[in-house]
Image 1 (cartoon, rainbow, N blue to C red):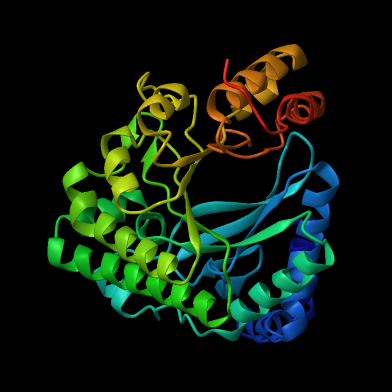
Image 2 (image 1 turned 90 degrees about the horizontal axis):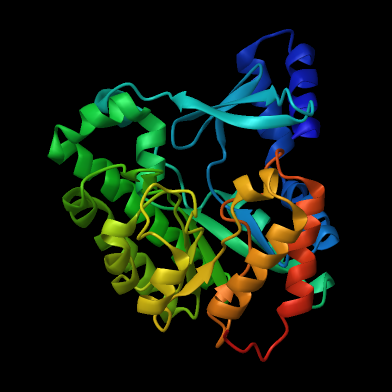
Length: 355
């Protein structure tokens, strides 16, 4: 992010602090065919170098309006570039929503699935993937319904939106239609492979909404997304943080093929990858599940032991894609990441026999 932040800061100064001129310059330099390759290639190189096989390529949440240190996304998020005090690395942080009410939403343009930048990103990633001869999979990532709705408004305004079910349904339906259209575009671009949906449904202690609201606003669209994807030969990986135990079975019934990350640090002892595997292991693939907290705090031998347990208990038959229980954040110790990799290399070769 340091390069992007520096470029935007330089162009802001070049525009003499004029946001209107800044937006004109930024949209001009970031929306050409070359932009996709420039944006994608560094990520693929990094993932390849550190031994991660699946590279998420985000085709959505692009900037709509720039300002000095960040931008408003096409869904209404406010993002700002800030330096992480621990290591000085520049990170893009979500700073809240820019939509204060439903009237603001109606006056905000809907994201366009035919924005050419999406196709540029996707086709650049497919070209780069070919160059790696099967060693890297570039998986296109699209948005879901929940996260794009509440983050565009912020939690307080989102809670107010839910009080008017008609307005809430309108917003969720708009987000769902966009997601289905994005799947259709991937099919039109002849893509067959895994696809990610970014759509957090919960937090450490439970769901963001009642199960009833998920059944009304979110799950029907999730099913349509999966049905559309499967018709085109695309597999669906759902990324959802938090404890989503209450709707886990319904998520499986919607047609999701794999789920990430099954956070091991939620407050619910039943939301456990080993327990869920016993019940649903023949219906869904699990992506995870080495806790970032453990990767930050524990000793390498503990990481190796737990990673081996994951592989040997979840991996037989192909039911596990090993990863962290969320991400590799700046607090993760290098020696623990290497320990996880070593355990994968030592114990992750098929056939894997359960312990």
